[in-house]
Image (cartoon, rainbow, N blue to C red; front, side):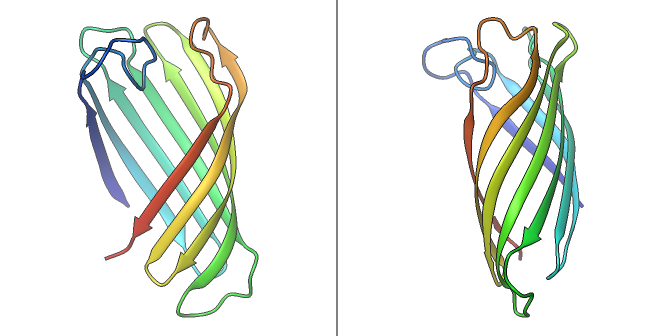
Length: 143
């Protein structure tokens, strides 16, 4: 388990999308937990993104599962299929979305590389900036 935080600063042009170029400071705090073994991995995240002076506050929830394609070995050398569901809810505007991501992970020793395509399953009140798809890239290193 780990606490997670990141901050966005309003630099560049104000284009409008909440995650980028909103023209507002943003602070995210979340809680990530999970279990990883040589057989499978499960991860969850629950967090809140605070946007002072805007209507973009957002509760974010994720759950993901990694399933190995190769026979489990130690030290770890695996290729995994990765499935993730995410829910994002903006309480001030009652906007809500459910997203699904399908990807692949490569894990060797303490390093994990991941790539996925994220698609919306449901979106409510996302009039102007509707998500069509995302490409997600992630790297993790265990100390």
